Length: 244
Image 1 (tube, rainbow, N blue to C red):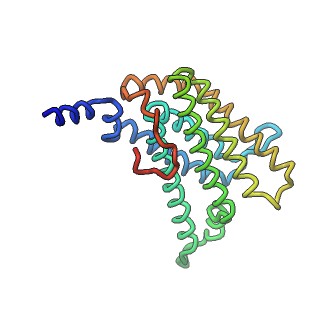
Image 2: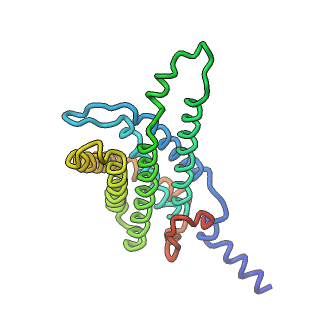
Image 3: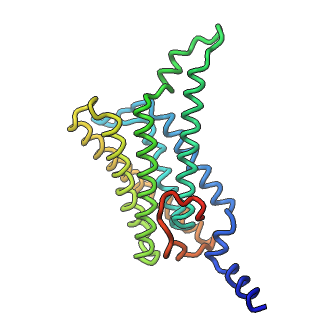
């Protein structure tokens, strides 16, 4: 009986309850994260002017994935954020591979847009590799910094943590993507300029929408009632998908 009581008490704790399943809101955020990542990759094909700067259209959507990442770490903890990042990576990779397969498949005589499809979706393998590596590493760093700062601050100062984690995450993302994708094609001065521009603009984007992010986090806290200490003592190993 004593053994049974201990088991029931453990199951009643917030941390244990949080690990028993996934709430509808968590699932919705996960789906939105994957959609934003896929859409941003598809939008990357178009360049848009911003004053003297030239950006990709994906800049509009991609930072949203970092905002969602921050919300998930804050409410559900690093372990679930790690799972979401892996799912986003897998979803984006699947879409990319399916598009390459569609390009490779022979078309019917009525199909006249093969060249257009190749130009739009036929990404160079080097660019794809740079993009996926940058996303994965940047997102993991963002989640790690957010989680560690949350523990150290005992859950206070979400706004500062969100901005600082984005700076680290976007910094790693840009530091991987631009050198891998464009070394030998662009000069290093231009590559460094692109890296700095991307980090500054994406972080500014997060600061701009911070009031919305704060509102979402407050609502999630009220609804989900998750354990604020769920990250204390966990493993930050990026491969431990079973630990959720």
